[in-house]
Length: 152
Image 1: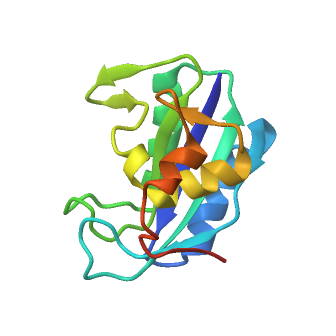
Image 2: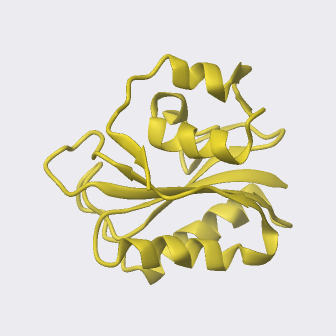
């Protein structure tokens, strides 16, 4: 199953947290984006995030993939105290080829992916022909402002 994952961190050693995701999926990775610095979204009084995306081919169900992502967050001691607050590691399943779900535990495609430059820009870098909900990632990006996202 082909999927796009989005990882972000703004606490502790953010680069090491992102590297843990790349390491976890090393044998299943099709592409890895550059690292992007991103102004906080939703709750703005916190440090900038580092974000990175992966395009992976995994031999797992969507919920098994989610469980792997959640185990990475737990290993990074992720604490969920406030929505959009600072975090050691956040790993989202953004898109799965041929799969959609409205399950509250795993909504695919990610319900806000089309609004987030920090998701779309790395995705476009990895897969220039990608589409989300029938629209090209390139066109979705054209409709967004800069959102404080810059490639490192």
